[in-house]
Length: 321
Image 1 (cartoon, rainbow, N blue to C red):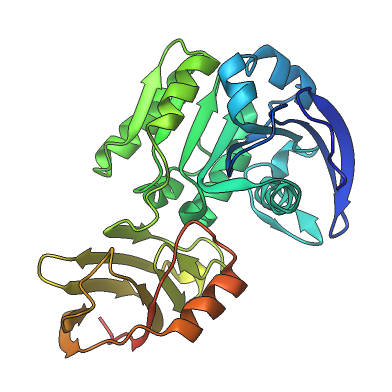
Image 2 (image 1 turned 180 degrees about the vertical axis):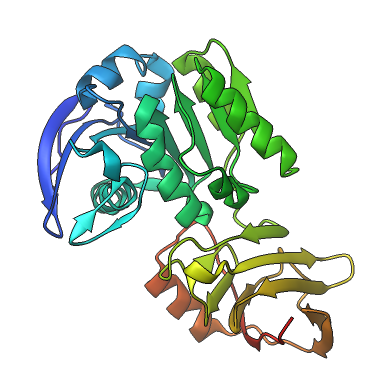
């Protein structure tokens, strides 16, 4: 109940977990009939949150259909493209802290959460998206954007990206994503809020992607999509490729420098009425799985992601590769 104004752009300063946040927000004036898409925006250098919302996101369809939250990432631009920690928050932690607060205040559609980076603010979006690719439906870059570390894009397999009004930095992102084989990056020399809104309506989150690529960049990023991983150190370059093939009812995982996995499944990914094959670093075994309602509810309660449900949890050791 701290963010109450509707139908107009409002600036406010809030403190969450000792982190000071300067934001501007706008929510639909009419009462929502259900969950609402969210645009979580990192502003450019010298760009105030309200000025950004007024200059770019002034399309009536967007204002009437989405929650808009723009964040001033802070004065220390060196920290924008890192995630940070509670004692030294970077752009990523500031965005995720803002996200947690907004979700307490408004009915956010968990399958239509979009990250937006304006200019240099794209660094904060990059740090957030590479750590939590399973949280978001897609990424939007506006203006002179560039990546701080091209290897971060390895985690963008299931993150469609739209870059508008960009230059060489946007083209470099498109090229790298293409080299990775993802084919989900769109670059437009011109672009409006109406065009971005049209793109967003066509790109809801894939809550259960059949193919996952993930390179943990921090020791605390221990989950992505339908897999949790432990027993790794980010400094050693761990990585995981995982596929769920419903046609053959097989989960295939190639993991490097990771010792343990928890695999979450449901009937969208596999046919749980049949035995499931697991191929972990080339080692094959087959199991008959049972749906577990208490585990499903517990996972929902602690995970808090109301856009997806998993009815089976499989703990798995990873054979050395």
